[in-house]
Length: 216
Image 1 (cartoon, rainbow, N blue to C red):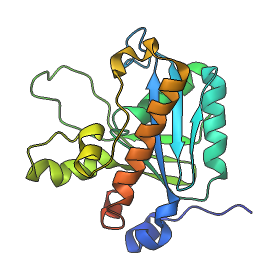
Image 2: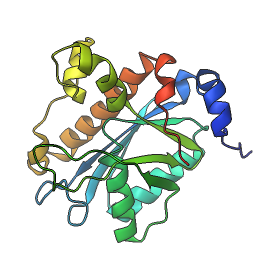
Image 3: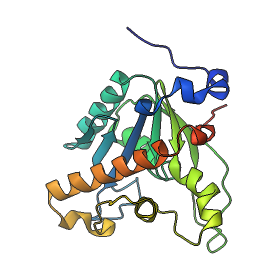
């Protein structure tokens, strides 16, 4: 049975009731580091992990098939919140761009959101989005932790430092040299990142529900 997504007014009224912790889904991607892995115009997505309360699924294979399978998996999950770490600036815009290049239709909808240019390089192009994926809303955990922990403590708000700060043990690889690792190592790495992302937000749920993206 198809379940309609909650409206924005419903989310504003009671997000924690609409989205219990088991409706939070961690998402992380890894890209081809043999070239510029940060440039979606040239680098393919090589792995995606989707973490739920029960398991973490890793999608591999040809990029078009990988994206199609991810989209289908999200369609079959109950309406919830897709949780990323810096996904507003990297993962989701990257996925959207690669899907367009591969001519793969996705339920992902991104809306550009204004973000100041970094003072060190005001010419650096940066895209920042608010998003939803089908009947799922989106929450960028980095925005949440930067808003309070990043202001209160002299620590990096990167995924690995935040995970270690709360007592978790994320898998650490050299992200700029992923092409030198085995497929099994990459799978474990992307699964760890998706799981850590989900856990960091679940640990602060429902207080952080106000960071769910709101699209016009």
